[in-house]
Length: 273
Image 1 (spheres, rainbow, N blue to C red):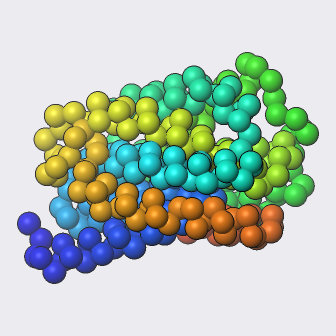
Image 2 (image 1 turned 60 degrees about the vertical axis):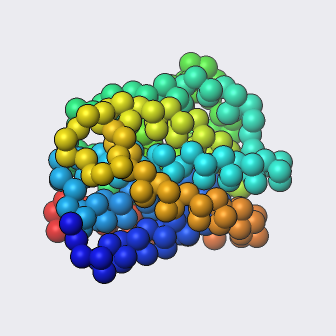
């Protein structure tokens, strides 16, 4: 067991991360997982959690926190009338299906594999958002079925493997078809709801009975971290949504891209540093 001073430092780091995650949930329409997963990975390591389950625990705990964060952010954006409800209704089956598949895959995946997935996808998305967003489009209308169903399943799958709410992927998908960034951000909050709920139960199942888990964990979800961070993210998320609607399209793109590069670099460092 680490000294009390170290435990207090870990708790303080989690509290700060919760504030940042809640703000980003509103600003970028994400559930905060892209912030929380790297922080959880570091904190769980300092707390002596087995490396074999450390990344899995970070991803599962992140998804548990994304549930109320996404609900709160979605409600704030929906009040402003910015959410594409037709797209969300069409993904009611596809996105949760992908999230469940992610939990099944994660149950047998290594920590290194999950970290590499996280790092590569975030870097590609950052580069696209910052340097190709105004020049690279696939069309002016979102694809119909069955392509739209496949995209929703893919977003749920990749987001579930990364422990994120789907905002980073949905923002990219919608902007590829010339949807306004503010609408993409708002809709992504709803996508986070569709991912986090089935993802939470999936990661509880995937890690059920694992002997390497820390106290107060149910499967790959640690409830100490959940209890510390959820209240903060719920309070802060609406302020992030307000800030998003006060920013320009390009400001959102650059801020989002820089954020993703930072997160990707952190995980590449954990693999090869």
